[in-house]
Length: 127
Image (cartoon, rainbow, N blue to C red):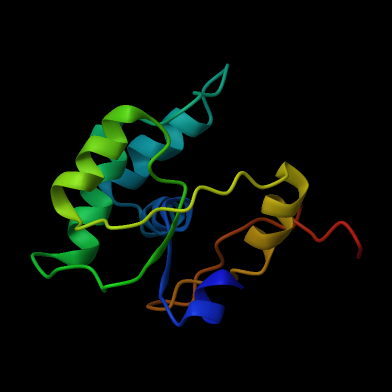
């Protein structure tokens, strides 16, 4: 919603990870193991997440405006982002977990292959 309101692309690190998992890449397999660990990790290591953003922009500067969700979540990720992306403003929004889950349910499939990104258990709270 915010991305469309300000005319900016939306990049979700969770969606990038889900695509890697669905495509069976090395990063995807590593992320899948980490996410299914007991207990689950608080944050995935920057060595797993940062390269996804680097790969996304592949030497091209990111757009002047971008809505980035799921990153940065700690100081190390913030420092990585500042090194690679010119930032003049940042807005940090902490969403209610139920709202975030419902929002994720609206992102259906991989634009390249059509693979579903989320399981059936991820549904909107209001039906």
